[in-house]
Image 1 (tube, rainbow, N blue to C red):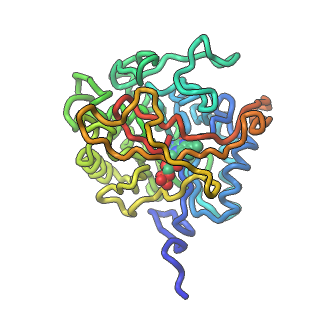
Image 2: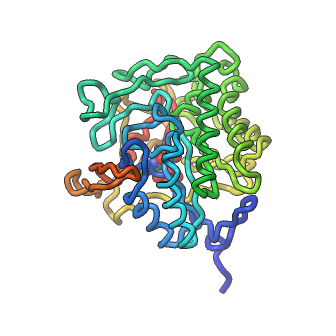
Image 3: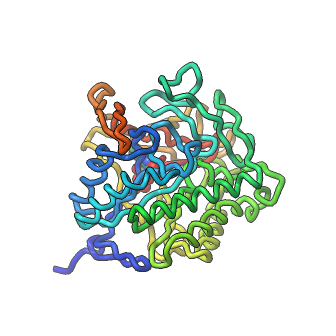
Length: 367
Ligand SMILES: Cc1cc2nc3c(=O)[nH]c(=O)nc-3n(C[C@H](O)[C@H](O)[C@H](O)COP(=O)(O)O)c2cc1C
């Protein structure tokens, strides 16, 4: 019997995945100060033991301010490299290739961990030692009611963010990763530039589609230049916004064409739509473990401001699987040691409930 295509190798530049099973990046909100330790070794290592061709580390902050929550992984300093390298070595030792998603959450940074509820960290709800921090975005457009107004990045500050992506890509190389993925989806910073709902800039980085694409493309171009030619670069996109006034499929196809011109290897759209001209149809192929029969479909959007559709417009499908089987917070609580020797106690895997869009915008099916 011939080998099913799913289990056949896939060459992406100089990296050959042993099969086409890819573990998508999945935030765990389970580290302190960005440092991965035993939790991630076990969490990601089990996928290598299970035979996945590529395992992608969750959205990893390129700056501390770019983290979604205090529990995110980070690569904003050289000190983060050894912990990541330990995970990569384990993945390689057990036959998987290793990827990492580099991310900046923009206006959606400084959020609570999902199990602490929806919304931003505030001085009132902050856990001890986990104060909120000021957020940034393309424009001063808050995520929604009750969210702080982000600072609109100046052109000079855009350069700092771009450099942070590049520095994190170099550290990814030091840690031994085979694949880097730039996170331009799910309503986070680069998506905030792409969407006219959140990008209200009057300068060269806003306005027309070309203007809105400019900064994400600059980031990808700079990361590509720093990332070895023989290693693939992925970009994750949200193919459409939840509102017709937002990003359209045509916008995303145009973005994909520009990405291709800059040496991008594959787009990994979290929704069912593949980019038009990727070298492979859709690289991200796995979903989180769901106990049979325990998942239920949402009938209403999980974000607090209600419908995902613009009033008067037909509503698009927003059904999402909501895992209901995660153990209680008390049972999930584990103790870990970070590479700095610091002990931290925080919960494990949780729901994708934070995968919410900027108002009326990215219809994110993931985080
Ligand atoms: C707990 C959890 C955390 C997630 N974190 C991320 C993330 O860090 N980055 C990301 O792009 N997507 C994230 N997602 C979305 C997944 O990568 C994936 O797209 C989603 O589970 C749907 O699977 P599919 O893309 O195979 O349909 C997360 C999903 C879950 C369930």
